[in-house]
Length: 231
Image (cartoon, rainbow, N blue to C red; front, top):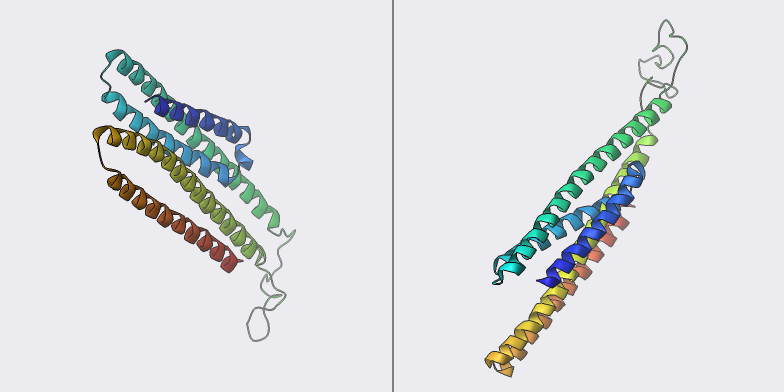
């Protein structure tokens, strides 16, 4: 149970550090930082739930009360962090909207006077729009691909960071499971389980590990081909 407490404490400290970085400049914070904060919040919540489940099985009343007090503190910190994160995301979204609005207004052409026939210069004899015409207030066509590519790149970066956060979470869970596995082997030896059974379990664990890393390689290759195809 102490290992879960230390794990939750480490995640809480990392979350506070990332939120401080986000709050320092919400308008320029990267999507990677937001994805990292989201992943840390989810991981912290799972750790708190595991810590709570283990505390409920504690037989010593004093240790159980201490664990429950720590859990309450962790839940309060997690709720406050989530509220702050949502507030910072709204501030960033508002800042980006204002920036995009100002950019669009800066691109919009202004005319000092309106001609008698504003469509005369843009129409040819057969009634079609000429090559030199420009619709007032429209966004330049060249700006649309750049904005689309930029938005697509940001989304891909966010997906990659989320994948990295999930991978880090899986590696972290793997370390916890390995520690639990060692304890189970020790308990199994104490109970007298045969070495053949333990070797079979280890063989299955190696197979599961091979499947896991194969999935990681496939995921990385998929991101590579997606990026190559879009660019």
